[in-house]
Image (cartoon, rainbow, N blue to C red):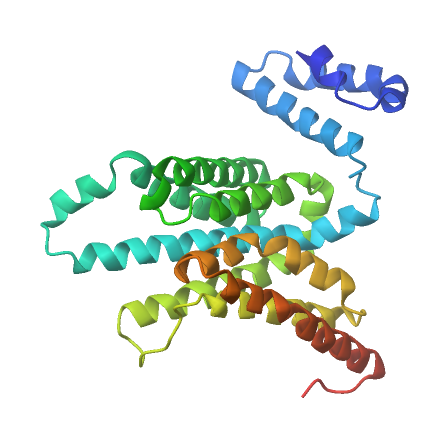
Length: 300
């Protein structure tokens, strides 16, 4: 197996490090069960693809991916959490007996969507807690299975094109981030901020659905995107940078929440276009925040 994986590396890298890679792999997997060997092989294959695509840890794009990584996890978890909340609100309001309704909801592609959402949410939580070896595969598997189930369910889901594409993009961002950048991003404290993004997106929606707060319009899914944009501004303020890298990271993290806005707006592309058009304003605010931080002035 290792010989086939080795072919994925660029030729020059393979000539320079191939022997070391093979020796290390065989030493690490000697006597291990098949599952462990496959997991290590998959990790090597992912590293080889990143190297071939120029996504090594030292590359500039890897730094952006490292910054985007926890927020891509957060956006994926938040979008799936909102999906679960929409299902639960419909479930508790249904006049059908709950056992019958639950059996119907868990059948077919719709049931796969619900299970996939749970897997993504749990996987993202594990990855943000530092257990990325378990969390990342679970999150990616959940995102891809969600995409497949959305395509299979077709019009019943309401969006069999945009959401699957967004979930695949989110999985690609999570996978493309080099492992050392994942560790660095979590160690830098961004995991806590990413967790706050999930809470700020999901909790208000849960409160509205539970009628715990006065009615607030969230029909167009703008609130989650505003949370993500504000996070980009906050990161720029904390780093004192010009904001380009932070806003690029938020853009990479945003597809699941953009797809959610598109879905709840019933396919109104104008709504999403308006949200996307707000990014230049966000960029200007982030640039101002960074400039004020460098000048030692308060943001407000």
